Image (tube, rainbow, N blue to C red):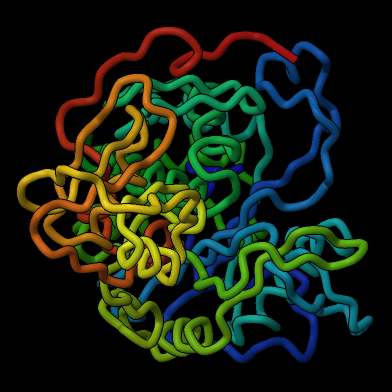
Length: 441
């Protein structure tokens, strides 16, 4: 669960200059710029059944962090980098036990102190500030700031979080925004897509607050800071004056100077007995990421952090089952990772004139684009009622190109805020649960 307003609070806390409370010995040394750890805690403690229903958080809480975002503000205050640390990242805890587990478990083992020390251990970066909030804190802060803009280019539905959002731009209250940033069971299940939505929500909120003048002058910025402090737990050394000062500085940061990224992942389903499915960071790329932040450098445009592969595609060929009517093309597609389910024993009597034709069912446009990338020049044809993919090799010689699927590129690559949005246009009010939610289990 992303605490969008918490992240804004983090950003505004940067000028306080105060060290995180209770700093233990042996921590990473302070470096250039300022680093803040933002966490959203998954805890149902103190929530009534009615509140759980309203927030759509009826399950059992883990008393762990549901989100972690490390925010870096450059020393010259001219650039901000926000890096998401997925909750299932497999790391060694910094309590001297040698135990490894999901990074969200550090909070359950030792609260905010161990969460900070563990992040420092695995990144090598000194954490200067720590902020956290919970479900109701997020809701109240978003409401207090006038709502949030939600953006999607496809219908998003997740029964677990209660999300039901049509394509487009929407203006949501705190309850609707909570569902949007918590949803994990939409599109491809898991955290990377959710994290990207969280980052987009943060970016849109900052943009709107700036456009509405909420950070434009000392009075306006102080009012915004006061709203944040009602529901955000700070490190005890950050007051409304500090938040207001940095808020005004943030208003001068254009979208091109704000970066968002997710830690590069090497293994997306690393099974560990007693721990479950985990994410293993890409060692070389993540080291390059932390080194860039330690040296106060931009993270966008650095190929060592996230190289863009040749012919990148947005869906995994291993999830695309396809019938092919020509053996050589079928063999090449299979070698490229596609699941070839059937190959005609003999060539058809009449082939389509021109390039190959990809026939596919409605709603599978992303997969069709992936298959088309492997067949340069192929035509795409939606066939109503079709339940599978079919490639009909045409009269023109077919070429099969190897494509590369990397979820880091599709969902977590470093981007500036001006390239993060999914749509352009004015937010529109959305009916039903997408905006205000409905009570449920």
